Length: 329
Image 1 (cartoon, rainbow, N blue to C red):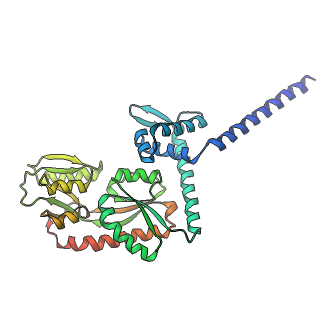
Image 2 (cartoon, one colour; image 1 turned 135 degrees about the horizontal axis):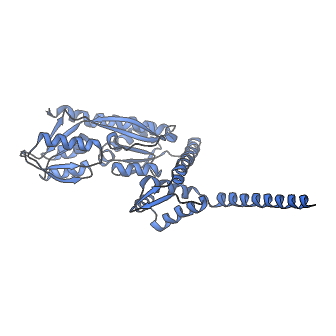
């Protein structure tokens, strides 16, 4: 008799555990959303709640609630708050890999849907550095639309760091930027070459040797290499200021405020409309202009077509100018 009662208590406990597990699974299914996973992924990759909220276009309290909701579902903290930065916990690291995989699969699903809907216009979400978006993307889109008449572009003009952020949060599906400005990306992205853009020295007319250096600091080894080259070439010059884009540095040079080192495409309009002196630097490597595309979007032929069209536009626009420029050994 005692054995029978003990078995009944054990069986009841087992059923209670099963009920609780089913209840938790139901809660997960109803409360776990792609929006929460996306919020977690963007915050994890940026390490900053304020910047993540800005990139996602939501208020910071809303973003905090999304992340807190996911932490509540998981039952453990996903981030450690250290000063102004957010660092993933071990649980956060493990979940990020799974979250990125889920988001990537969802992108793949929507891409497949688009490919099955033949009458739907192709919408290309592209983020690029300013000179590429202004000078190369328009002729590239004109070429692309001859092969894909319904192709449209949702363009975002940003710095390299912001381009990477847009790719991770899936606001953009193609990023166009210099390869040396790209941090190590996850395996879910493919890098496709577009063009080797000559590195040039941009100087005002009759500039003295001690004219200040306009340093474009992109936080990369390439930026440091340029600063070292400039110090050797112009030892009397001091650094005037640190800037975050080549296009801005070229505008400063137009005003006679200093010299800068930049890829040629970033100063094409200035070189044509002002008296700037532009020289190709032989002992600094050209900028490798590349496209970063999620692997889930490689099957969309229009993206591959746009990469090819950008390369054609770069060769048509830059090569003749580069061939006519003097070289600086």
